[in-house]
Picture 1 (cartoon, rainbow, N blue to C red):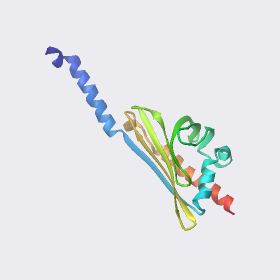
Picture 2: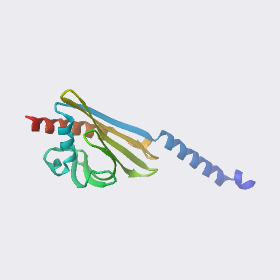
Picture 3: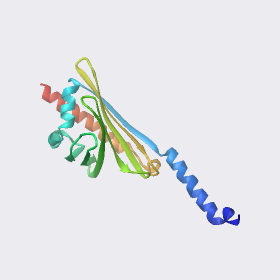
Picture 4: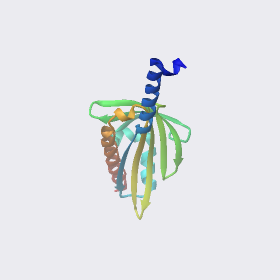
Length: 166
């Protein structure tokens, strides 16, 4: 019974409690929306044509892999000037002309669940980039640079698709 009240057990309880609190608090999101003056099929075609990203995409470069369910993709994420990171993601779900869902990160530390969603009304398409983060490191992480990168990416998508429309 002494072991349950020992100094080491108290430290263990504290560490476990702190870990549980971090897991509960360790959730953040980024969200970006833009209206593209084109049907969603045109937006989808640009989004999935990773071979052309170098021509227009200021955020995602050097894509390797195929965007299909169960597939893996590796790319370089240009978060901001001078800061680029290699990213690996598993493609969870693809709904043609509507949804692309990818997941990655380090389980328990920091993971992301990333979606591109296309919603069409009339001849316009709303492009939604949404990413949810969870894990022990999330409370200590600032998502603002990623938010800015996704806002920039949405502008890139709009510019590319609309330039192809004219």
